[in-house]
View 1 (cartoon, one colour):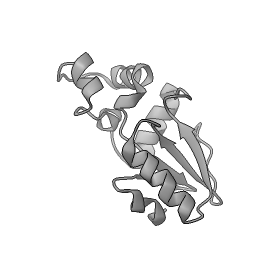
View 2: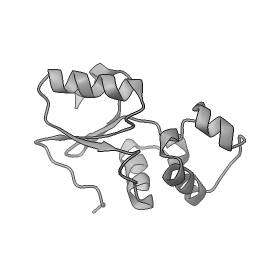
View 3: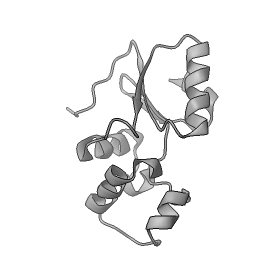
Length: 121
């Protein structure tokens, strides 16, 4: 069992409060009356275990959680292959580079590409 608790009754949304897509997703979810538990990754640091679990739930590798097009990534890192532990450390120390928002409900987890995707969960 993982470190992340989920419920069928509410959607847990991991997001960055600086992300336009995340703000739109939250606004859409609230307008639809969806029960949302918000976790702003800029205010609530994720553990390495949580980052690994989110990647696992999405069926991707941890490195695929990193938005290598993000200005912060480009400013701090050169394109390179890193170990899973290194990718986790990068996300922990630079949470803004993590792809998000990520929505969880029960056993289902999605990376929200457009704000209306939240309705799929």
